[in-house]
Image 1 (cartoon, rainbow, N blue to C red):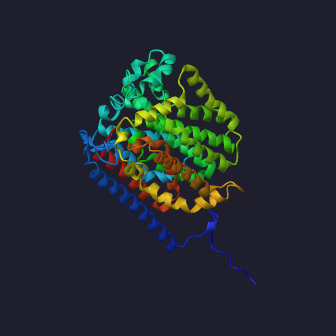
Image 2: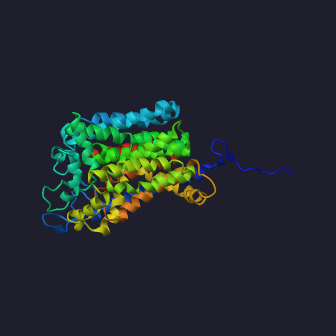
Image 3: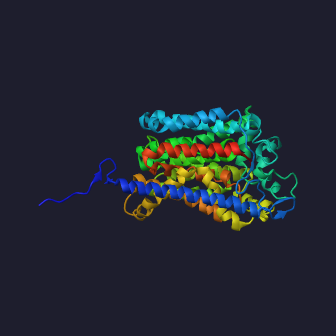
Length: 473
């Protein structure tokens, strides 16, 4: 008597999927993308209606093109030909190149390609408006660089200039972040790299490095095949519209490498796990002194340790974080005081009139343009393996698609926590870059034969945003 074995896909170790089932899954991907488009359109339509409620001389949402901090302004610029060329090359050759290059070459190549994509998109708005003047507006950090003469005195007095009505009040972005953000640009200025162009180059270079960091993380946790499939989607991420050139792109790059080093240490996929752990702690501590909201990175960091089933990095991560805490506190800046003062300042500004009932869901609608429709479809596919992977964490480490689903689930959880806090009313297409980049690996779950089309969709979306809207911050 013989038993009939199920048809399996030997490459994946899973039951083979029939053609009709594949078509059904692809249709569901398209339905998910369609639902995301409808959500965004709804946010635009309702946002325009709500914004007709005038508060002072502006609409109540304080946005030029709700739900985005942008203005309708169709245009082309010197970066347009380059952006089209980069997009075409990555769409046509990206997936095959990601499969064939050696890993040591692929990682820096992805970083370089992501930089090319980000620079070209930034230059669509021209050198001045798109790059050199981005960080020099009245809201931005470079306005205050010359006000920092003595760092300890600056840190000891920093919190006293946050609230509206304080003497010599800080600009909005300086007041809205811990002093590490401004000190970064002060340091660049002191070593001879002052001005908007150098600041933008710093943010684009560090911000684009997220692509390499996410690849390293996915490979260590989920396997090299999924990391390679992720690479082209990281390169052509629509998030590049906001990475170039904003300080939040810089924050995202720092945070991404903190998680990557933590992953390498936890999975023991590096020859120097203790050094990687200390580096993760130093970058994580720096991130917390760049932006208050990045404290929720503990969610993603915890998921990495759970997947790897290891707490071995913690004795080295914690001292790395504490070095920053001790240094800033000794110099006079107490993080909890800065945060509580910021909350008061936040509700002295636009947040006091921006309706929570709109932004609690419109913030998420804005992410459709940041992560793209391919990511939405990938998240739909990640939902299936997520619960089995989470349920099995007590017994064994998830691998492959299960581990990837846990990572993107943790990223989505961080985003939802930030959303529920009420401290992110609008501008989340920029503010949530640190969370959004970790949703992009979900694209690896899409069928390989469809990658070219989904990549093309990602590129077209970013190009449309950058050519039809003038984004600002």
